[in-house]
Image (cartoon, rainbow, N blue to C red; front, side):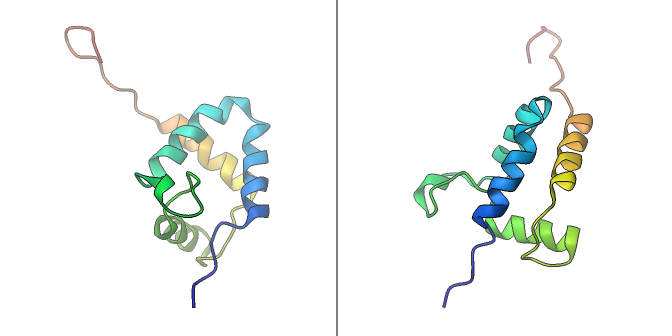
Length: 98
């Protein structure tokens, strides 16, 4: 018996819509999605660059107390704003390159 997917279609669309209306957060959202997406994600179903299931469930438990929780739009936007505000730029080397 398999466990239900933590990625509900309605939740994915709702969270995507929350980011789509905030073009200033698009780059941050892509960076964070990349950070949470496992390597070689295309090799396993659902063949989408979604966060690792265990990481997602851990984040939901720590934020909402339940592994099957779905973050609301305001929380997603707040998280992305925090990520953008606390991002550390790659320091330049003495020769001027990154």
